Length: 398
Ligand SMILES: Nc1ncnc2c1ncn2[C@@H]1O[C@H](COP(=O)(O)OP(=O)(O)OP(=O)(O)O)[C@@H](O)[C@H]1O
Ligand SMILES: [Mg+2]
Image (tube, rainbow, N blue to C red; front, side):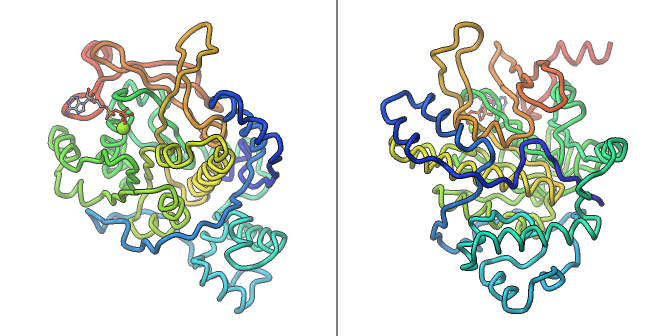
C-alpha cells in the first residue's frame, strides 16, 4: 500500500525557540502563556531534549498476540544511501532498527542519540524518506491532485460505534491522521476510545480496521471489563476482542515519551492500525506545573505530537489523542472552554473534535479539519459503548 505524506501542518521543520520571550510569560495567565510559547513553536519545532528513561520493553502488556495487515517494508537500514555499517551500528544502538524507524525520527533527538551533527541526522532521515519514496511506501514529493484523491479514497476508516458520530467523520476515524477528542470530564472521550478498541478489530467491511489496537493509558482509566461489556452487547466474541488490544499504563511523562519514541516497533509487534493515547497531556500538565517549566513542557508535547503525526502517516495508522479543557475567561460568546495545551496539540492534530454533555446524551462538534464541515452530532453512551441516541436511531431508520 502506498502511503501519502501530508503537507498541512509540516512535520519536518526545525525552528528554534526564543527563550527570552518565554521568560517574559512569567507574569501572565497560564492560557496566554501557553499561546506565547506556542507562537514560537508553530513552525513545528522538533524534538530537542534527550531524556534518560528506563528500559520499558515490558511496558506493553498484550491482552493479545495476533491480527494481520500492516505495511512494513523489507528494506534494511544499510539500503539507505550514505549509511554504512558504522552508522547502521550507531543507529541500532539508538534503537533504530528499520528504515521506517529512521524516517519518523526527529532531527534533534537523533543527533543526540547517535552523537552526530543535526545536519548529518537530518540527511539520514531524509535519505530514509527518499528510499521509502523510491520504494513507493511514501508518496513522491509531488503528485497530481487526482492521484492524491484516489489515494485518499483508499484510506481506512474505523467506526466509532455510533453512526451519527461516524457521519461527523464522514465515515469513521481515518488512518494517516491524528484525531484529537477534547472535552470536560465525563464527556465521553474514554468511552469512544474503549468502543473503538472493539470496532477496530472488526473486518473492514463491518467498519473495522481488521487490526490490533494499542491503548496508551496515562490516567489509569482503561477498563478491560468495559471492553468485555461493549463487545458482548455488540454480539462480538469478547475473548477474541480483548486479545486484540495491547494496553500500556504510563506513569510519568518520560515514560510516555519513550513509548511514543518506540511506537513504530509496537505497531509492528501488535499489528495495530489504531493507536489511542488517553490522555495526551495529563502527565505533562501535572509534572510541569510551574511557569518556569512551561516552555519545556510545550516543547516536549510538541515533540510527541509531531512524532505521532509522522507515525500515523508512515505506518498508515489512525491515532486518537484525548485532551482536557480549561476555561477561557476571555470568551464573550459561546462555550467558555478550550482545549488545554495551547496550539501545540491543535497544530499537530489533523482533526479536532469537541465533546460535551447534553442532558442524557453527548454532542460532538468538528472544530478543526482540513475538509470536514463544521457540523455537530449527538450520540449517547450505553452498554454498547458509544451509540446513536434513540431519536437518531429512529430518524436513521425513517
Ligand atoms: N456502562 C455504561 N453505561 C452507560 N454509561 C456509561 C457506562 N460507562 C460509562 N458511562 C458514561 O460515561 C461517562 C464517562 O465518560 P468518559 O469516561 O468517556 O469521560 P471522559 O470524557 O473520558 O472524562 P475524563 O476527562 O474524566 O477522562 C460516565 O459519566 C457515564 O455517564
Ligand atoms: Mg477519560
